Length: 511
Image (cartoon, rainbow, N blue to C red; front, side, top):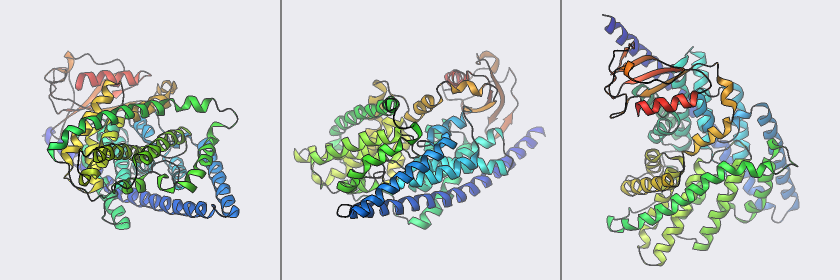
């Protein structure tokens, strides 16, 4: 009888969460679609202004004045709420791990305004990271309005993050997987079900506004198996430059630390100043990179041009991200991968190693491989590019290059970039969360140390307490004699300033 009550209560809770996920998806879809629309329109305005500025000092002066205004506004926003800096993905991950927390409304409107101004100016920043943070803050707001706390609150934040990426890219399945693989690090049924609900509803809103055409749709022919030998050198190239990109992102702060004249929160003005000549001479390479990616499919650029484009975007995207302006590296990463794939494909075609008809395949594989190795999220990379280009025909090639590039960065000592950025952002601030309780959701994997063992047989880290087990939809109150099985979802409460170490120890038990 008690088990029946528990099962009914669990189902009611799940239905309530799914309903909340649906509401979150609609709200996030509306906000992020507006965010995306304003960015595209503002960038078009700046392209027009600086195009006119080639022959008119008045237009040039107007553009410079607007850039200074953008820097001032972002300076004020960042000073009042530092959590909006950068992409926002590390902040969301930190929030779900219980390492940081912030009020949803101040972060929401500041991130929205700061993101529109920074990304819409044409800087080499992506809208996807900010969209994820916008979505997560809406999820946080809905959790507050519906009195959801603890694990339920974190699930709603996760679903908002997934919905934000879905609305930005029109890729609901990959968006759900990204949150599970990269941000939440958990594949619990409840979590993916609610994230998928929110992602689909957000995608419906965005699709209604922007249409059904995939964001990076390309006319392409999949690479035949007989040419797959050329995938290995491409993966090696992507892995090496992926690791270089990681190191540059993690060390760009040292460069800004040497700039003493300009306040740190106002350093975005440097990136805006450097953008002016690029916008006037090479407007095709500005922004997140979607226009450039779409233009690469036609094999119209020389190898020299592709190398120059890559160097400019590599340096300036890292430098701009390091300024702290609200904007992400998600789409810029894909653009860098596409440029590497295009450069490599150009060499292959020029040497007659592959027919020109297969050139777009290398652009597409380049995106998947570069994102896979930098973010260390290969499954997301495969599905994301599949949804974005609108075809399944490249699936085998995407999987091959994503796996190989991932392994290259692994051998070079690379870690997931967003988690690395989170740890760098936290610094010593993790100690400030000592008094906060944090509930972690962990799944017992097949073959893990916990699989098949009693709870009392396992060495749980200090400051952790197993408070609930979810097994096939039923909730079990833990006792020392209960045997854990693969697939069990554990709710573990963690406290203390060694939270990161405790989570790592629990991963060693369950994964």
